[in-house]
Image (cartoon, rainbow, N blue to C red; front, side):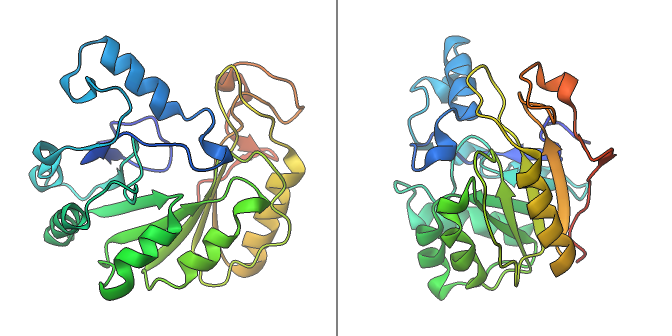
Length: 242
């Protein structure tokens, strides 16, 4: 049963929360706004706002769900945050290994910490490992991801705030593309999306268009619901073949 509005997953699992800005895509991070809202509502886990913290009481959540489920891990943080203890990461991956019925989608902007963690560990076969690439300035994260032996490697081009240029998608299985939401959202251009999807098609990479966000195909700003999810007249809902 789907319990999140994130189009490309089914549930979220946040064994840690909170983060710090590390690149341009973080500027208007939705999770920070959401954390402030939860803090104002008096939710105990968010009493410190968006400060990073581990939440051991959430570790066993996936164990209680019997139906095979796609989990986005740490929608409210980055699993490879600088303050994340590797010992706690071990505990998270222990839960992942105990639940092979589930798929765990892990997305990071901290590719150097991710590759350090996996330098002497195997990636579980039910993990999809991804990096965020919001513009050409961050394509080096793809090179790092390629060095890690994961069954599925994916890239989130979201929020796409700049032209990414030429792409080498060797060893990549899935690409998510999406524009930014919110009152301060930066524009997305159709030609940026088209360039990414053309590369995906040419290199056999599954393509998923998440949303236009606040800026539509006509480059006019409006409510994101009005802009919808269609690109060139269709919804791109492809998933990697595994």
